[in-house]
Length: 463
RNA sequence: UCCCCGGUAGCUCAGUCGGUAGAGCAGGCGGCUGUUAACCGCCUUGUCGAUGGUUCGAGUCCGUCCCGGGGAGCCA
Image (cartoon, rainbow, N blue to C red; front, side, top):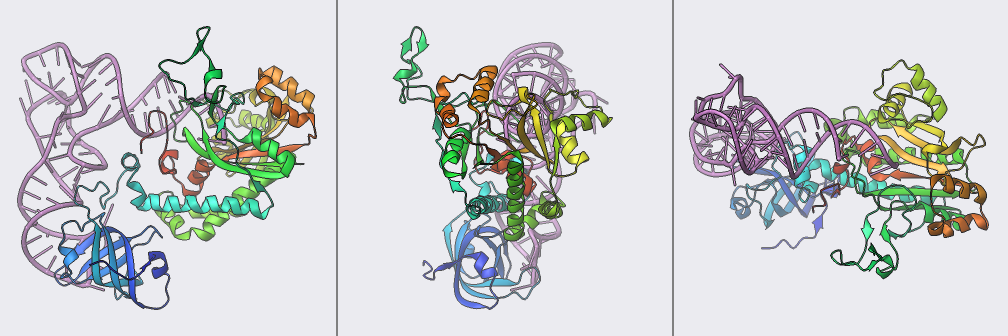
């Protein structure tokens, strides 16, 4: 017989200060302990990390159902009472149990420790595991915190296109978007004639909303984007996904210092928000994923971020006496091992590296007066590496065109971007923050595939 | 794409010198218990990633391929 009482969330039940009769909880059974005189169910509904202990008479009909095992979905009605035993404050004394969806012993998510690799292979079920429940609640909270942060500062949220024709940004390989028949595309002199395609030109999925974001910043002042981003790079690492979410603020009338300040405030706000709003889930990560996590986050919430120029960084690396696998030289990219040394050993915390050689960076970054470096910044953090990359943008039309020529970026596809410098240009700056890398940093999880519900990586787009 | 490591029961793993498959957990049965990933006893479970080769004999050695992980490059 279906239970007629409205459902309460377990999170709300466990937060009560008084007992309550006539309650109903619904969720998924984590474990069943059957005894002769009493049976216990651990019920979790995803509203919080903790499960609700259900105490039942073994005579209740549903308890005899072979489908009532780990993984089953049930509704329970009864009375919320103080628990006489240690381990939990409240328990639900069941008067009725309704088996909504049974689960037999073939249920892949058993009540034991599984490896993250295995859980990845059952991504359709892993949201029901503690780690992933905690992670996806954290993910949701930090997405909300992002919007709140920018709204509090008067930034306008803009939606930049997912499908783009500008593949000239150089941020990475594009996924092609087309409605042409791959077996028989229209040809023009032996080459695919993209004018016949849906958009009458070559298009792909966005690798960054930055260029369009700049256009909006040069009208609305301060803006941000927060959306999916796609890179068709064949990167097989714990830090890269083919589909990820990026937050890209862009500020008019701002220079590189303003940019770093915003990045620092933003990161600190997010960490503080997680500490304030996701306490139980962070405790779980602190105990099961990264010991010392909470202390690290609390330190970060207070600490000043370090800053050093690329040139200083190179000097520090040269003077370190460390034997790096890759040599350090001014003009070369900082390798992962170099970045790790700087953030983990030199400053032991978040580090802005600024003013990179112009040759290493994108065409839109503002050329410094030395004409050798650009007003770029990378924020490096321990464990994760680069979490934010940003710059002051080149607002001077002539310098921008010069830089495009040097970098081999064609002006045709970017006439609209150049127009923003042709009329009413102004100094502006912005950055991109990889949302999954942020989650890795705040949760202590070490693989990007484990901080997004259904990861897309080379060779894998399941679920 | 390159380098390294791995793939054995539903899960986590062991498997010696090449000699014919093993433990814990999960599951089943029984017992016990206001229990806490309960506990105790008994029991079931295998295309040893795929394929070809060497050998009297291959989980074990060799080749190729597939999948997973780590690192590199690229980047967020």
